[in-house]
Amino acid sequence: MAETTNIGWCDATFNPWIGCTEVSDACGPCYAREWAARYYPAAKWGDFPRIRTSEGVWKMPRRLNATAEKEGTRPFLFCASLSDIGDNQAPMEWFIDTMNLARETPNVVWLLLTKRIAMLAKRAKEAGGLPSNCAIGSTFANQEEYDRDRIKLRTARDELGALFSFCSIEPQLGYIIPDKNAPDWLIVGGMSGPQWREHDLPADWVRPLRDFAVSTKRSFYLKQWSALRPKGRGCELDGRWPDGAIVRDRSFAVRLAAATSPIATSESPVGSLPSTRRSICMPSARAAL
Image 1 (cartoon, rainbow, N blue to C red):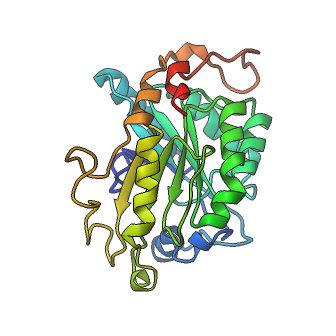
Image 2: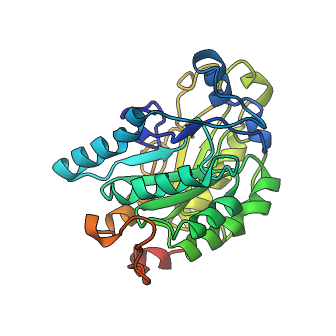
Image 3: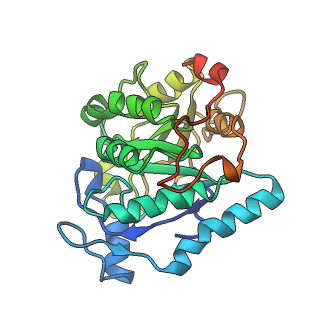
């Protein structure tokens, strides 16, 4: 919920509301739930009303967009770090407001991450479609979640015309074998916090994901190893990847983002959407998949 962040795979975070319900094995050590309990106790996890954030918070993406337009950049905005953008317990009106805000900020690449990819796709269709500067992602903590949601994510990417797809394998709780339906960008990380020793991330779980990304020309991003604090053990894998680079690559996602022209007038708020949306990805970029 800030214009700067310590989350290495994005440049800023935005939360249209706070609160969520646990639906995944990855929800056990939820940093958002712990943060809310300490700093924002009005927001509850579970079957409770979500708390919409203030108007001041909602102004932040517009400021980010103005700065990006001035500097000629395309910052990545993670939505949402303290909730789930696919949560159907949040009012549909708030979701529509979020989609309209994304349309009003075309210089910003919105990273819509959810553990409820089918619900996100359903809501996006009901809201008039996905803004062309939005990427969609799912959380996969283990093979079971990957197998359950990978095709849903790829189908949603194609049907909604998302900028690209990505996954957050954070924390990675099991060995995952990817396939041709894997997202465009794989983000991997170990658990941080008091439980990290119980879920230490083996390098042998990470290497196959890295090697798969290299061989299929996807991006791979190692956020962190398991540690008490996120930066406690660094993020290098085998020292090099590839040709001396550390394992923090988002080049494929950046190339797809650069393939679009942020024209503020190309999209309108819900209620007056054009019947045909413009192409948002270069065909050559998808061909590698």
